[in-house]
Image (tube, rainbow, N blue to C red; front, side, top):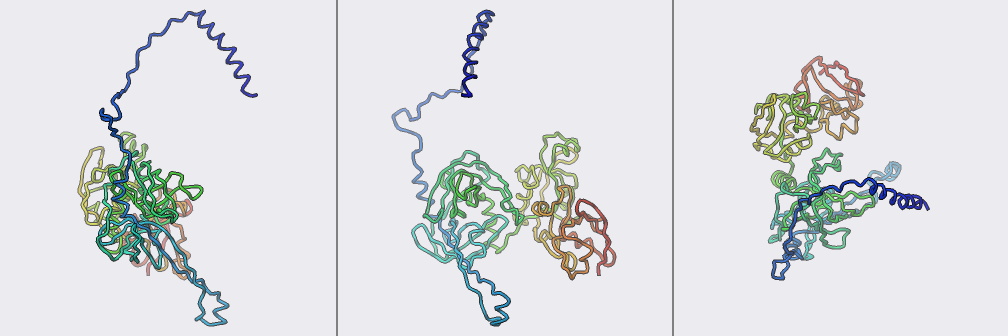
Length: 473
């Protein structure tokens, strides 16, 4: 009923409008043909043979045997209530409960190394691998990295089919991809889609202050696909399927994979050292916003990272000649536009590696070669600063949890034990910006700035700055 008045007006209005045109006798405009992009070539080769690809079966036959199912299990013993322990003694034990997990993995060497996700094997007491030919092997966890959700496991056998690794830096939105894994435990399954986006950072690893650079795809990924292969149209491994976004725990075409270049870097470090060694540049930085660019007399469209501080006089950046207010624009020809870009590029580069850094200084372009240090040597991890006072680098995750303004730098106090001499002096959540007028950015510089006797710290707490005087015994 609501549409009738509009329809009537249209019908009545049409002849009036037409009549007005006739009365005015407006001149007919002269139109020219638009320039069109045209391709009249046939889909076939002209001889009746189609050139369109009709199947990827031959390619998939080669790569599918390199994708495996990964079964993990963990035994959890329930805690016995204190009352029962007091009644029956310390020897009484709680009931054991077994939890099973399902994921996938990708064989990357013929002697049994397999890439998968950290969350597939994390804290597992037992890991078992089932090959595509139904053979089963017990697997050893070589190492895992929660910050990238990458893990390496190994089975003791040889002559295995291994996936070919591609260069994930060359991926483009629209490339055809295939996800292979064991979704929901139904058996090996192949789904097809395209690359929907690259360089996604979603906060999925925020709790562990992780490094995210996800490939997004609409190839269906479900539970059990985790750790499986994302491959390109040539059958090359481009990513390790890791997560989905869904409001019903099922696939809605928004899946994410760890790029194989990042996974390869983590894998090599885990295999060679059992740990992850990340590069360290030795700078504190801010993203170059349009307002900051204007302040540096640069076009507002300039992209880069401003060095706000050098963490130490003998750090890699300082030794190479970089200075405060330098603007980093690229590393090894890869542009950097955000702090996350810089952090990821440096972290995925092994310590001791030389990198070429392009920068702007007073508006003039320069290039410098920097030999990266090791992040754990730089004190970049959480640790005890003073007796009973634990501090950590001010990560994005901690900023959010403790509501720290993005403009504040330094280290944050994460824990103060009740029996610490400093319990009434330093509150949890306080950010230490300076110690004895020396800027601090990590645990190492915070310790170096201390001396025996009276010290002074500039802290930010609940939106206010204040100086704190304390004694070091």
